[in-house]
Picture 1 (cartoon, one colour):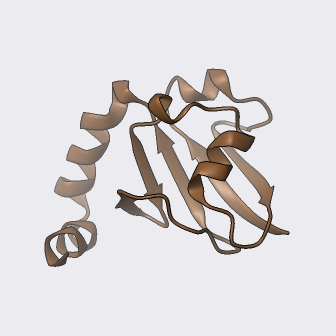
Picture 2 (spheres, rainbow, N blue to C red):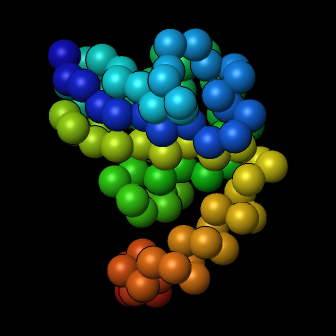
Length: 99
């Protein structure tokens, strides 16, 4: 088993139990995918619009590693989240334009 940190944005905090101010630790099997974390949190894929893994927006179901940090944001916050990332985080902007 491995532990990852989950940070829930906005209305997702009302849907998920067991967090403290939107943050919680989740135990998953080694090599679990992001989709497995969503299932454990009882979130439907269409409820989560933006997924951040270790501070970077991701666009595919990826394997997780011990200590990873997942930020999960709903549709309502997707535009604001991505705009803030692009504007305020030059490292994220640089990473996204290199791909």
